[in-house]
Image (cartoon, rainbow, N blue to C red; front, side, top):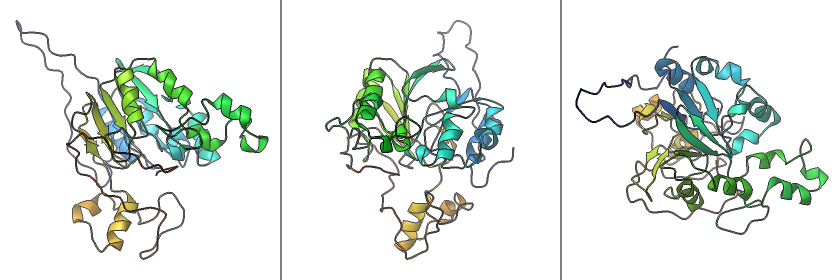
Length: 324
């Protein structure tokens, strides 16, 4: 498969080094698992990484938003490796997106609310986002579980006889608490950990209760490797980026088109290197079919992009209902 435009051509070499005679056994080699930032309907970067490096598995960190059946958009990757995923807040935007994920060929590989052994590593998944109508840490719980929500919901608030479609990507305390009683090596979430300025310490508490050592998350569209934080290794995987289990970049993250528009409106033209990562993306609101022209106010706010986070301090999350 041809390398997509704008992606790094540097290949990482994965070679098992034989241990010389008489020396101590080497530390157990980590499997080749790739973690993929929010695709938002574009899967070239995942297909390219999978066909080039043939990893043991790939895990997509939410907001897949497939515009066509999964077997079409992820066909090359599915032919060479396992594809696992957790839902993001935008994966319940439409019936078509929902059905392509929850009823498609990778439906059984949804990690949300469970722990799965993938290539010898136990990986736990917490998909979706915190929503105030259900539960916003560390505030009061409005609905403990989907069953409790449905007991109090009127018929007009249900969808297909169950939860409203929107809340099928909401985090319920019952799912969170069930994970707390399990153990995993890695926790993958859509929401960010507490070291992120828009993250949640509830994610930290979950990882520590599960004895997880690594967290990979998407949602914020920022590519950041955090310093050691509460004994955890936290990796924010950027917009359409791909990293390996150690956090090394396999496919560089792209700049969010909304950030580009903010820069343009502020009179700050990005460098040519930045343009190289977005040459296939128009300057539009990627969550709407309507282009946003220069000078118009888009449905987003200015956000500072952090190059790195070294202090490891938790930031208080903004109490908005939905982000991204």
